[in-house]
Image (cartoon, rainbow, N blue to C red; front, side, top):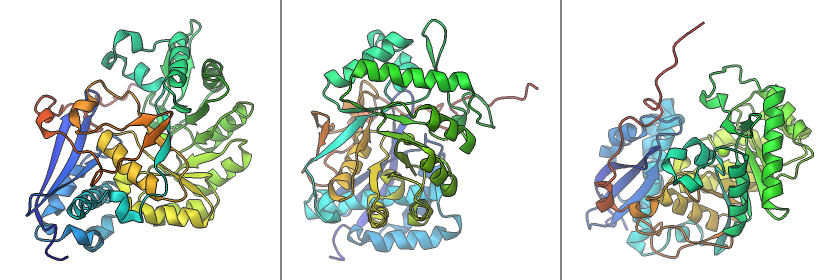
Length: 411
Ligand SMILES: [Mg+2]
C-alpha cells in the first residue's frame, strides 16, 4: 500500500461565482489519479489557500493511503497556531487525500468511513429569501425578492419543488412590506454591541409567520441567528419566538455555558457549532448540554476528523448536521459524511445559489422529494470542471479582506 497514491503535485485553484470565489485543492498522484477538495475563504477565512501552499511540500512523495499520518504530521508543524485558518487548511488537505485514496481503491469515499448507513439524505433549503434578496442582482428579475410578496412566493416554491424544510435569516420590514437584512455579527449594520431592539424582534416574528402561512403546515422552518446577538439578545428572541412552530433556532456563540442557559429557556431545539474546529472545541458544548443538534463544517474540519466529532456527539445522544453553503463539491463531501454517520439529523444545502454552478462541476447533486440521493461513484462523486474555470476566473475584489471598503469613524 505504501507505493500507492504517491503524491506528485499539490495545487490550489479558484473560480468565480459572482458573489464569491470558489476555492479548490487538487492533489495529483504519480499515476495521474487526482484527489479534490473544496474549501472556502469567503466565510471569515482569508488566507487558507496560502497556508495550504506553504505546507504542500510536506505532502510530496507521501502516500494518500495514510492520510491520518499526514494530518498528524501537519498538525505537529502547526500546533501552536491550531484552529482557525490553519485548521481549515488541514481539513482541506485531508478531504483531498480522502478523494485520492477512494479513487485509488475505486470506491466512494463513504466506503472509507464505514460504508453508508442510508441512501438518501433529508436536506433543507438554506438562505431562503436571503440570497435572492441580498444578492438580487445575480438572479433573474422574476426570482429577486424585495418585499413580503417575494417572501411568500419563495416559501411556496420550496413546497412546489418538493422540499420539506427551509432555513431563513433575520429580516426587517418597513411600512410598505419591503425587507432588509439585519446582521451586526457580520458588520451589517456596524453595531459591536450586537444589540437587537423590539422592532427587529417583531419583524423577525412577522417574517417567520409569513413564511409559515405561505409554506403551509407540513414544512419545517429553521431560523439562523448566526453571531448577531449576545446572550441577552438571544434570550429575548427565543422567548419572543416561543409561539411559533420551528424546527430549530441556530445560534453561534463561543460560550457553551451561555448557550446551555439559552437552550434551557427555549421552547425550540437549539443548533450550533458551525464555526468550531476539532473535537476539543466541540466537547464543552456537549459536556454543558448546550446543543440539541451539533453543526459540523466538514470542509473546515476534514471529513475523517468530522467522523470523530460525530462519534463524540453520539456519546451525548446528540445528532449532527453538516454545515454546507458552498459549491457542489462541498455538498458531495458533506453527503458522504452524512451517509456514513449514524447520528445524522438533516443536511444544509443551497438550492439556487447561482445560475452557472452546474457548469463548474462534472456532476450536480441529485435531489428527489426533499432528499439528496447519495452518489455511488468513486471518490466524492463529482469533480470541478477545470475547463470551465477559464470562463469564470476568480474576482480578486471578493473575499472577506477585500469584499467591502472598511468603515471609517464618523463619530
Ligand atoms: Mg448557520
